[in-house]
Amino acid sequence: MSPKAAKYSFPFILVHWLAVLLIVLLLGLGWYIQALSPGFTGRTFLVEVHISLGLTSLILVTLLLDIFPKYRHSAS
Image (cartoon, rainbow, N blue to C red; front, side, top):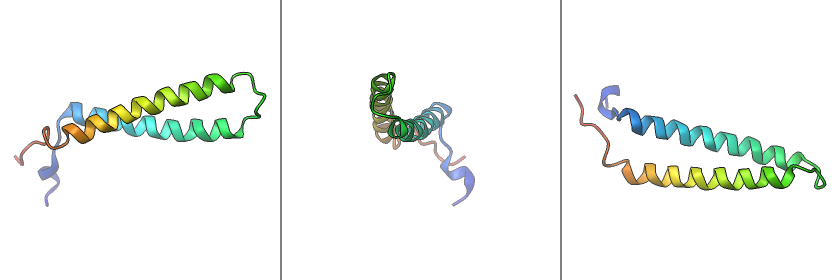
């Protein structure tokens, strides 16, 4: 299969990399939260941010899986 056979639209690629960035950010944030002491003042806020970003990434990944077959360009 040639490299041009799997060309995707720019919005699809943008959403893909946004989802990847969010997932990497979530991994780092999760490890950081685990390293904090339980009495840390901002821990609750960070957990809430982690949950919000996790739900956002879940929506993005679901969107990607839904539109994947629809936005694939034919080979040029």
